[in-house]
Image (cartoon, rainbow, N blue to C red; front, top):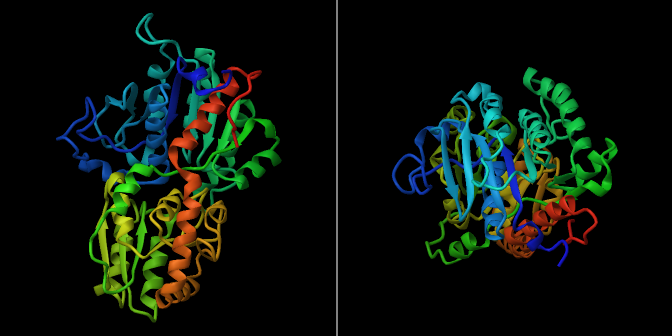
Length: 422
């Protein structure tokens, strides 16, 4: 059948991504004991939407018999080659320097451009780049596609030209120089995958052909949340509000701590995550008038996130900017009402009054008032919870991965009738 998943079974996809889930001892070739995360990796923002997306998609594509070579940064973990699933290989390259992360692309260059030995693995047919705030990945992908004479697909996790916000020197350089690289690469790509319709519209306004843009959001792994539904831990005596994600300036977990201290209703707050803002958030917690009701757990592996979410009553994502906010999808899959900033692509995920509540970014008082409203109204929480579960059904990874293979089939055999792409 033309354009079906069978058309990509024999294809070799080279996937390039600056971040990936941290390696554990369960992976072939990984350091450490079985299931143990390298503790140094928690200093490099190991939990985040893009990390989870790239790994979950790798697993889902592997079950669909897509041969994959994934090249990513090693961050604090040892330089290694590990196996994921049945046939996917993950190559971790780069230097363990958090301030110069884009150098990973230079150290990966020789490996990415090397053609596979005859008979060892089939040649690269398609290069799939995952672009976040690391523009070096796009340059690496362009070189790889040219070297292997392969098609190029780019997934935009964060558009530096349209989504990135802030006034630091780094942000200004990324928006100016990075924006040029982003636009030129997306114009050259055979297909562009975006997470939201908002980004799709922005790229169309930049002149990217609408026929080459496909909206495929981040998703959740149903099997993880099925197990979480069977969690029988006793409920908290007070409503439990939670934040799960990277502790980074973009995410503004500090605003949640401040808002929680201004709430009139009694509740508990749980902060789950690690990253460069950890010390700042911890300081704010110590200074909070509600410090005795705030728990900061640190990093947890992604497989444990469904259990964490099942222990909460509300999830909050107070980001300053966000392409999509994939933790929102996982929260909805867990049946959690969410409170999130009305920025970026978040309104496409969170339907105000139906699956959660949206608040203006940076407005601490409004965030506190909204949380008070949810804590005081269990019927509202129950209604939003039901809407969240229903909304989450559209975000299951197996179906989303099938749409990605549809994009692969379309660019490899453009005249074939492929599976639905958008």
